[in-house]
Image (cartoon, rainbow, N blue to C red):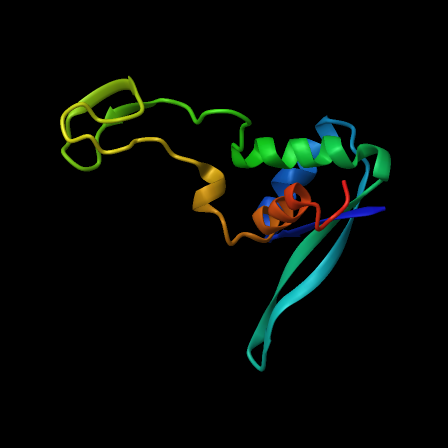
Length: 125
């Protein structure tokens, strides 16, 4: 069994549902991440069969909106100057970059740290 760390309860529930739909077998291993005299916080590690590991990683990446290749274009109001834009990566009025990389925004999340370790070869795929 291969382990995919670590998810809060809401994430665990939603990813478990996606695994079920993708027919990925899994087991959960609870981990106490914050322990104090007032209680603690339990997160979960997914354990999947080695033959389903890559598929499981793809499901979790999809859950978080991580895509290979360029990030999607932005449509809406520019957060800097309030100009309405449609399908752009840079605001034409103020030149603010509107590209959003979910992986960069979640860089400290345990799953993102794990992905970086996978990509760098610190963890075997």
